[in-house]
Length: 93
Image 1 (cartoon, rainbow, N blue to C red):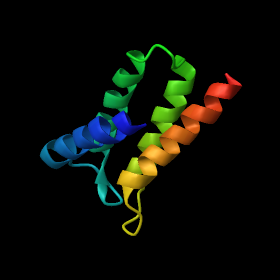
Image 2: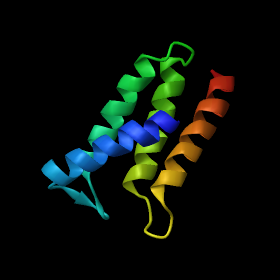
Image 3: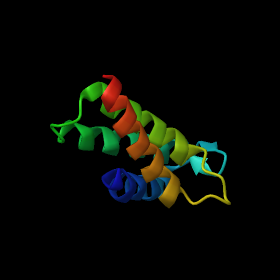
Image 4: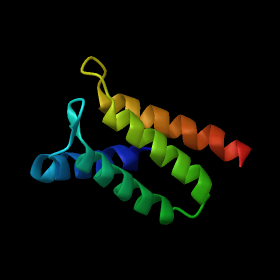
């Protein structure tokens, strides 16, 4: 979850600022796609997490990154949602 925040959010910011043209709320679709792809690549290199659990965590993390509200910092919400999803979805699958 912390790797999602550190690497995924950094990729979203870099790509979103440089190439972001399609705006959704205050974020760009391109930045959110960079977040998704970066975090998906991270999940592939962590052997203890199944691809289905990782895909669920990446999807929810991307959604939180995309629709984060100004009052709530996504630096807190992304790791919390991702860790919660990894923990609980991992028990189900």
